[in-house]
Image (cartoon, rainbow, N blue to C red; front, side):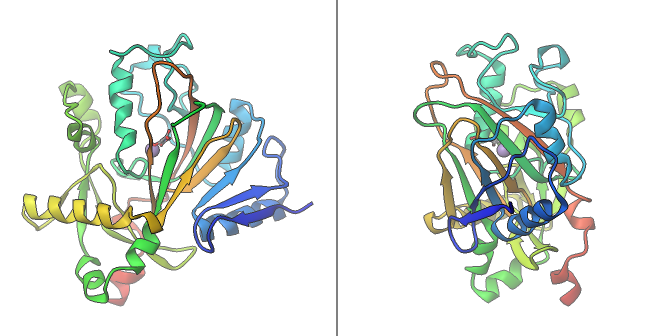
Length: 299
Ligand code: OGA
Ligand code: MN
């Protein structure tokens, strides 16, 4: 049977049924999933029953896996394989974390609109988040369509933004929440990187804003002016008409294209409910400034 794609809107987010991701995929099914992914940017696969290995095997069909940064926890404190980012509220012993947990503070950063790993020189292409257990209320994940947000800007604005380069750093997003308690060693592990503000997505030939809470400074613009522009664009891109809110069911696998979407977690009672969500992350092919960009070529 071929997969069944049920779009949420005509161009953003779709549910995918009639596929069992624990089994090796046929080439036809993989091609159909990719086609849907380039079109909708967020895919939801309900009721999947995956081991960590099966989750990672499916993810690998889209490119090489990233390893989790883990810098703020240290290798001894990792609950999962190094290829899985632990987005849960659990400590290494599997219990709900404490109020004072450092991991809890760090993960609060996920509540700001962002795209994964834009603070890495080679950022993430896709993320695949699997919900093993979820909170009964709250803990939704919201996604913003940054292609639609780009399309909605006036042409003159699009032209102004086209060539801009932005500095991203994990410490920029954490500082927004007042979390600045990092060692020099931690800081030196993740120096700031440059990314394009407007990307052209090769598979869909659509332009997209590449924004994140990690973005702090626009090159060749004064600090305050750049920060104000980034804040304004994030507000623009996350207006209700560009946003899909995912309400989790146990065993949902949700995958998104980090090149052209932002996402954020929403609040839940994290000292009460277990929320065990685990993320496999696929690397992009290169830094965004090093990729061909039709916008730059056409200019
Ligand atoms: C992520 C993330 C938000 C959430 O997994 O990259 O930002 O709702 N998750 O868990
Ligand atoms: Mn994220």
